[in-house]
Length: 109
Image (cartoon, rainbow, N blue to C red):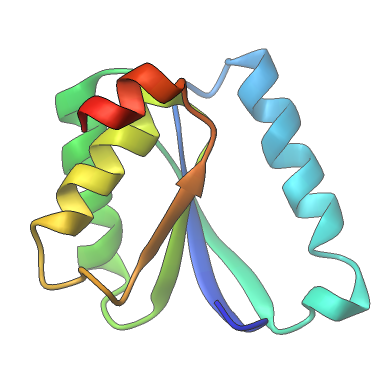
């Protein structure tokens, strides 16, 4: 993101303890002065379902057109679905996807 811009999080469920911990620490880190030009605009949930995560990615990009520079997904299902959506959309090369996922699942996407 080059140290500035907006991003969204695509998580599994609102009550996923481990993912909420990652999100909490992202929000804490964003309070540091070196991240003052980076803004988390939305936390979305795909319920750890591939299709819901895929359409959730689409929804994020429609809700924030030309604004989101990255999607962070602390879930294997979410990161794979987000990457698959981005790679087949006009956002390819414009929106980065990062997060946590098992190597086997991410390699198949």
